[in-house]
Image 1: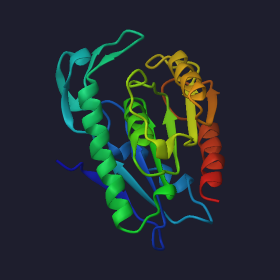
Image 2: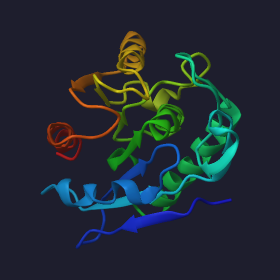
Image 3: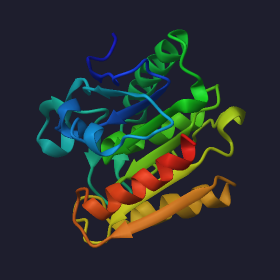
Length: 217
């Protein structure tokens, strides 16, 4: 089943796309305000903010909520339902397919994800069979690091990993671990931290804008 999506169109015909994946229990509405901050002279960006499916989440007493996958253990290693994660990633990849079919160059498609959405983002971007523009991973972790089947097309995909040093939900050590793992695999990683909890901050958004400007140059 296709994901429900909030779509934000640019004033002129779109020639670039950012697909933004929200965190556990949230919705696509969370990052809609980012459309005002991320404008570039060389890109007419269409923003897509998909809503996660409704799933029972074990660590939240089995409550049904927006979730990209089930989390069964909140330990540092985070036991997850990787089958559900990959099913969500496949749905996001369908969104990418649709954008390419509408004439968007795959190299001008950026994947962004916060927390649980970022874990899905790693799977989406690193396994997609056509070259993408990049991945932004915010306050998240590389959930499928041990068995991901990375595509050759995105073996050197630019990655921006950002994390709060005071994050009580996803410890910064997990963001750093992802950055080190991906660097060791040859990916060009930009790793940035901020004195914040599990959230975004203005300085981070400014750094995000600089990184995106290079992608859309």
